Image (cartoon, rainbow, N blue to C red; front, side, top):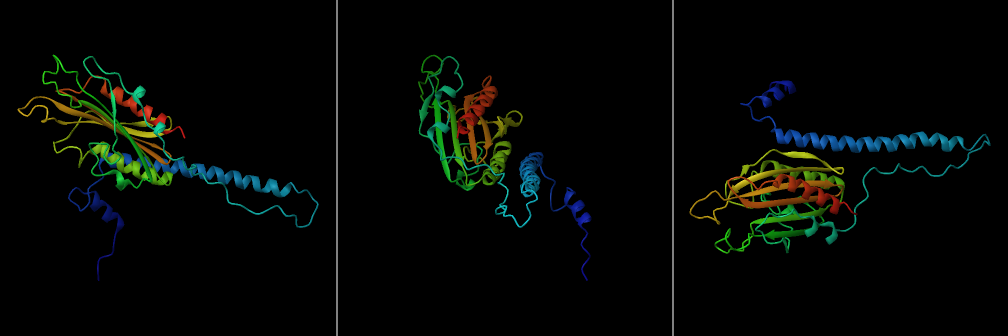
Length: 285
């Protein structure tokens, strides 16, 4: 006869580092907390709607007075849903423009808009964005390069700074929230980056919070740039990657810059401002 299953012993075994399952990572714990917070917020909203419906029902019945009889008080209807109304189809105005971009230091050409690619936006995403299940996507990209001259003796016009953005729209807010959890793991862990074959390292802490009511997170990474110095130098790419959730819409954003050995001064502050601009634009439904 098989041994009786003991759920407590099984759980302790799972938490044992030598067991079959490892304890969740801090990033996974944060994401679980985010999901619980969003679910509790939704449940609280539904509870408030139901409470209002329950309180209002006796008022409608008693308003008939004592006239007796079987007065028809109308059909009973379900309380209104707490789910947000689906947003409108995406437009170009839902994306950031040149006026939203950070100022450039001396020696750079002005930002130039390029054709966007809705499939690949983040260096750290593991594959095309189709896997997230959006029903619509719009993207935009901006690049700049060091002005040829004393600081750019090669005269190369290859982009040395790039900003990529995509706005995704989903059938429901729940679908968008699930996609946010997935994209958040890309930003925080960068375990299988599609954008480079170089080794990727974290560059700074995870910035997590809320922008005008939208859940958001961003983080910096760094990896080598051998294409700019094949014989070896301290040049590296410094991508700042972020994601924000706005109802049934999801914004993904990357601001990457060529520098070395340290990231460009103020890049993190610029990224925070950019993410706020994307939330403002994408939230104008």
